[in-house]
Structures are given as C-alpha cells and as structure tokens.
Length: 176
Image 1 (cartoon, helix red, strand yellow):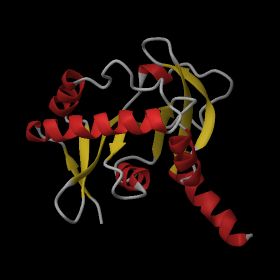
Image 2: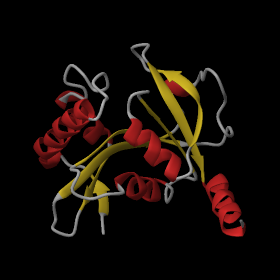
Image 3: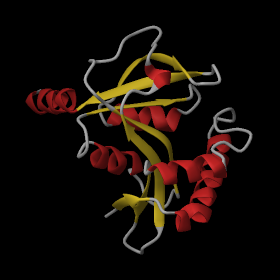
C-alpha cells in the first residue's frame, strides 16, 4: 500500500536521493540522455514543493517510495504536438519528474490512480530511450499521441490517458 501526500521541505534531501537513483537507473537501462546535468535540480524540486505540486508516495514502512510533480492546467510544452494529436481537449493534469526507490513495483499506477481522483485526463511525456516508462504507460492504457518539445527544444514522446478511454479499454478487454 502506498499513501500519497504533498511533499514538504523536510523531504527535500530524500527526494534528491531518489532522483539520483533514478538517473543511475536510466543510465544502466539504456537511457543515458534523459535527466542529465543534474536535472531535476534541488532548486526546481524546492520550487515544486513551494508551489504545492510535488507529491510523495509513502510505503507501509513510512519510507518515501516515489516522488512526482503533478499540476492541473495547460502545460505550455503540450500546446503543440507533432505527428499526432491529443485524445481530446478536456482539462487535464500533467505528471512530471516521476522517480521511485525501485523497492516497489507499480509506482506509475499508484501515481495515476491518485491523479485521477483529482482530474479525469492525465498527460505525461518521456524520452524516446525511456523504455520502462513507455511500457508502464502503455500497460495503464495511456495512448501515445505524438511528440512534444520541452522548453529546451528537446523532443519527448507524449502520452494521454482519459478516464473515459481507460474505462472503455477495460470494458473492451473484458468483453473479448
């Protein structure tokens, strides 16, 4: 069981350790180009906490098992999508900077389940080399919608999950 709560300034050191572990995991799993040069920085994560958009997942031992940023509203990087289109134009929330301790499987599922208690449509993006995230997103019913570009111009695969589409997908799988 994972309990999700907003991050606090006292979590910052533990969060930075999670992000460093995630960077190392990415490098060893064939994704050496995402989260380079110290991204996400301590200053960025501190700003996320201050803005109230940083969340942690706490395991049954009381340890931080994951961290992510989630905000509801238009993400400027998602305004233009190339090679496809979003599932709909509904209001949405965006998941960014998800990292886990690696001790518990299914962290994206916990994150998405929590986020969908706040809003039905969820978007996220990931690097083309981040195969674990791509597979996890697909397993949860996210649709690959095209490519967006980050503020620095780098491309990211863009995904969208609509609660209505997720329910419909589950219904179709059940019926088959």
